[in-house]
Image 1 (cartoon, helix red, strand yellow):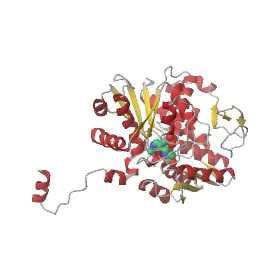
Image 2 (cartoon, helix red, strand yellow; image 1 turned 90 degrees about the horizontal axis):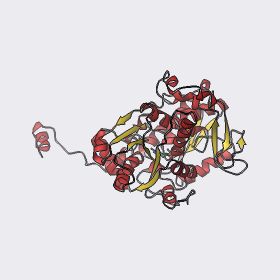
Image 3 (spheres, rainbow, N blue to C red; image 1 turned 45 degrees about the vertical axis):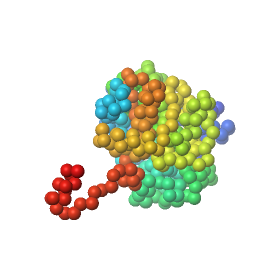
Length: 405
Ligand code: F0G
């Protein structure tokens, strides 16, 4: 295992207690600092002996693979989406479809590392607050590890597929009277009282696994770094993890160019985009976030300051998209590329379209959009926004009549 320590992202002091989630000295955000000296001796080809997936990048992971809890996460396709590129008028667009992970979202990348860490620590019960995907993923990995699991969900605001998954995998599903931010406050209280091991992205081990999406993208592009990576931003763990992965690849000398990290938020839940527009490096929390993309219906993102740093440091951008733009982008991706993503994931495509029209994205850029979750997670939204099934009797004549319309 690669040596590492947990330090404060704000003040730099080291923390040894594995059951604290913010810096005991200053209250800042925690992060893992990897000792990458041994990796500097390696080449990217050395990793290719392992099959594509999160654990190919074990030298960048702070958990001993001996404790590995895996359901074969990562290794998702990077589609070269020429049809989409043509529609939006950009020379090269790729879609990293993380909806093809074992539980249908990118969360599995973080969870394989997070739950492996829980096992390493001998945790008796794991938990998280979630807009749905984190809970689906944690429930699955906790089942695999045989650890008890509790998930805190905002009542009535979790897409059907995600709720079904948490129930199916046998987690204690707690329906909280409040939104995601409030559910997270409650889960954090439980963790602070040491009643559970918290696996939200405030736990510094979770983003470590999520770094793998960036490692994979670069690997799949044969280390030709794209100009830009676009991704949806909710609690802001993912964009921060992707940024950290970029910094680590630079540190080991495997890349010498940085993609512009571009974070997209839904208009009704956009504290990061607003802070970016104002040129601020901190954000103002929003009280009543609302969007059809329930996965990113978040007003007080835990890693918001890290996200802003990621955007500024890489020369990236942040913008909002409306619910209508999200639905249009979701349908376009389905119609042009045969890829079905959930609304939050379509935000990255909607962002691409918007930023090209705004002139922020140049037409000759090589762009990668990360699509974080599978469309089947939220069938209700798809059905509501599609033409209804056509009533048809049971005869060839009727079928022909309908098809000839
Ligand atoms: N896309 C999907 C499909 C998500 O589920 C989430 C977050 C995001 C994007 C945003 O990622 O929070 O790292 O900025 N879902 C969390 C959850 C909040 O509970 O499943 P982020």
